[in-house]
Length: 79
Image (cartoon, rainbow, N blue to C red; front, side, top):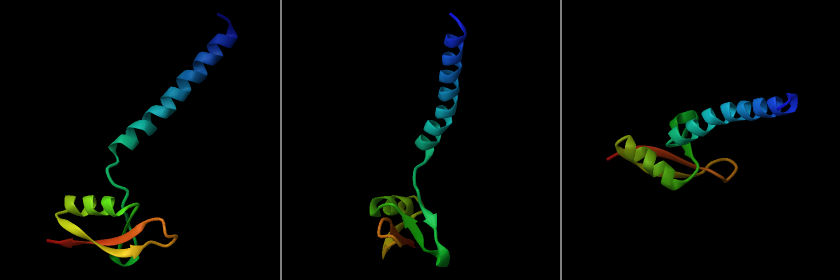
């Protein structure tokens, strides 16, 4: 067990320590909703928008595609 083995173990440990917080933060994220100017909200899918609004005690009203035609724009409407 020489210097080469110790260097390899140090790199592996560093990689694991850096990867752990990223993995944990991904597990804790329930919605990726962004508030846009004018009070509109943006989500990656209609399902995600609906789940977000349901958690807030309402329902999602779709406003159309977000700029770039990847995400959806919506607003939460109280029931």
